Image 1 (cartoon, rainbow, N blue to C red):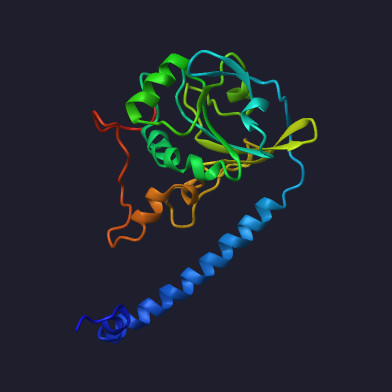
Image 2: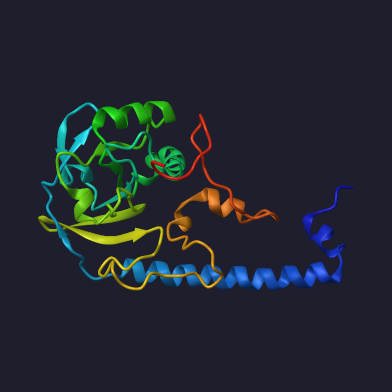
Length: 240
């Protein structure tokens, strides 16, 4: 007769059962902490205003606007892809993230509009979407506007900041409801002292919305120093 998972767990050592109980308690604390953070995020007061007519360009070259991306929804979620015009290729971590976002787009659209934005030209983004198989999530160039710079996503030296942004309608205006970066910087004070994780690891500011990291953290070997690479070659982030 096949043993159940409960029977298997009762058959292991006392040390395992004790460690597993401690882990379960921590997992429950994490769940409650995650909900406290989500509640604080939902309750944010009105954020900065962004012009609804901020121009964007679709992959086919059609000029549209940030406001039009809402498509009747009260909110718009965007992932800001690190891919500037003079880069030979996008950040592989960002591309991996969008690989996971693409199949979720139809489900997300039941609750919010969703899009990927990047400052690279539309034709380059079209080639990227085709090569990665992105078919469900719409991708737009922030050209000819300056939304990338309005969000403070360009850094000195030509690098960029990975970020996600939630916009919401406020009457005839658009507002940033939440804007988060991988390094957990303060969007109101980018010059403030940077956040340093207590364990000395990466800031992981966008990890909760990327399933890859959640799965790797379940493994006994953890995430280690693994890093997403382009299909053609392994390599560092962005445009090195």
